Image (cartoon, rainbow, N blue to C red; front, top):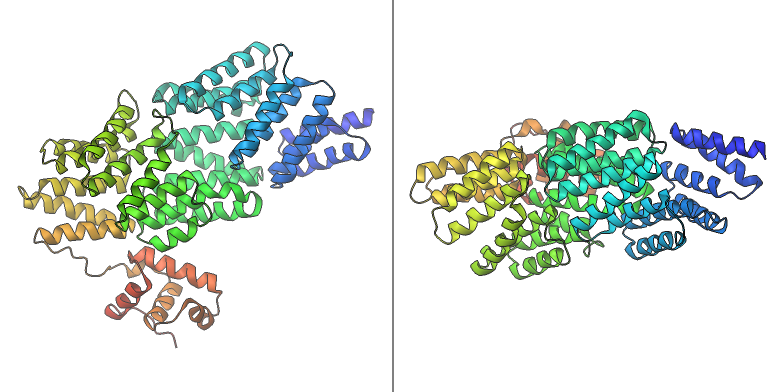
Length: 550
């Protein structure tokens, strides 16, 4: 028995030191001799960090049964909550609710203990309103401090901080998140999973409010943490969040690489967690004007809210306005009206209504967006409200819309959101015409330069069209960025000009077809082109530096 106790202690120590393989061996050594709830729980966490997610969940489910049989309701509840959350993030909502109910059931008749706090934390993460999240998170913090459970306290403070940021109390929320991180990094937690959750909550909250400096700083730390601790599932999630930061701030090439890395990690370890990342990559493709590719990426996940939002944007781009409106409304159904995550959707809905010339409906959507922005410390939401207000007033012929568009431009620029700033600038140019044609042309040209630098081809087309209506040359007949292509990409472009398919390109250059497809996609993105046909036409028109591939 002493030997088994020693193995359990060694396994726990290995978990705390992030030596997942050693922890696995210790716990499996115990289980070879006899069944043990503690060994099952520890093995489950080790397997999760090793990327064997399904086995990790199964091991913890077994630990729950053993703890329950032994009458250890506190430990059983904590384990059931962990299982519940794994099902929740994997999109298995019904299973998640079932395991949370089991956690509550096993605590019936049990007095004050950490288990009640863990249930409160998970209730906060399942809550449908921000205020409900805050109530449950505060209860978890109170329980943690009462029973002196440091891991639970750090976890609960982190969840509370994220909820406060989402509710618009950004300063208070970020202070709580940094308090949680300071405690976690300072050695107050024994479970590295708690530290990882605190990391992610801080980054996601910073990203949601446009605090890119803080988000970037913590993304880099989390990335290093995930690599050093060989935490495969965490690494996939962190790369996806980091990609969102890069994407928003205009670093699209780096964002694409980060998204592809995240998808590869999810595909290997946790496929069901890859859907949000796929939606982010699809959104990038939409902004690049590559609508067909975006649709292919979303195949099989069309019912997910993130995918529906991208599909609504695609429908808007194609002029299928009724479908765009239906999809946007579906995304908003059941959402908490105070959640800042609704802001981009409401702004999109205003844009759709304006495109349909439904000014009354646009006004109603704008009222929701304005209510969301009122009284918040969230500059990003306020900027979205300013842009939507300016668009609506311009559509109504109200000159006061210009001040809102100018405010949106200034806010988005201060937040370092180049695409959104350029879109506000283009709307300002439209609002100035025809009274101030020279000023309108100047604003449109600046917007065009930003769109071209980013590779936002559809937005660039819109800016060029406005310049033409103003009697100005856009200077955009063809892109002039050959220097951005690698030697291999110029070879691929030469073969595209010759009408070769991806399979033929792959055969000619002795590369895989997938690699050929990647090169073609990269060429389109770098040159701001929308199709193979445009790339071929460009190569014919600008042949000077293109090597001929025999």
